[in-house]
Length: 395
Image (cartoon, rainbow, N blue to C red):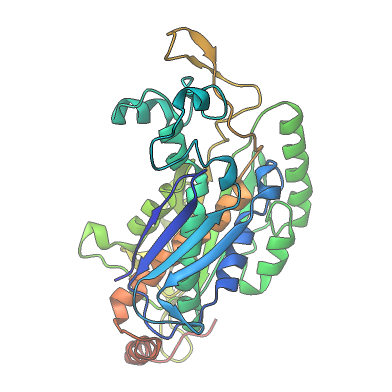
């Protein structure tokens, strides 16, 4: 029902996102898209590029007077640094390739360990890493955040909120078991590491400072929480329609993500069955509810109607100030890897991207369940479905 594509390179003229299947009538402005992109730039431990990078948003189609039209949304995010890269990233052949190769456009022949560089060169037959790293860059996620903004607005119109927060940075983990809501979003975004636990926040900031001083990088874990979902999104019928499978694929598609869990996930695997599942109780008003949230709001590939919780683990960034060893493919000898940029950590920003891709999956699953070409029709269809389930559970 809902699908999107992104295009563009890290230092190219612009990033482009095309979102198809958004119903008509969803309120949306370019200012709201820009605000979401601003959230993606948050986070302690980012490099200089985040300070001068500005996301200039333009919607070329699918939006009129602040409402979606039901036609594909085309969103362009201009690269404000493009004037520096017009020759290096030019679409057409340049007049003086030799001069270009002696400056900013010099061939990058020392692939970085942990990146797509070497395997991408081998797969596509490139003799340098520039064509690979430009597209493999996490800069691409800006287009996904832009595409997710209308999806989040659709969900919000139907009483569904999606929030992310950091629960681990390096070896520092929050001790809080609080599950954030939309009311906590402002406080989370105000945290330098997007952590709702003030005590853990201080230790995380100190860990980033220590890693920076050592010329190293940190990974971590973030959690995405969705409130207000109806039961029955996804399906148990086919593998590719299972909601947890779709969420895992979306989160694993984010650059540097190496693990995903739903609910208690890996910790739950260590428990006996008597303490690993959610007992079902009679709910006030007649609709059953779960006593606990160990399943993360998904059972049998479908949303249960309880709070949905998914976590993703991000590896430490592969580009270090102290470059790792690699091979110079031009000479065949040992050499330090190319250094393109030097963030210490991007986990807080990755959490915002995780929030975006989860919203896209949930909006798609919701439209799959309800159908509807307009917001009003989707709302009526959802209301009819929920009425058929009986009275809503009390939270």
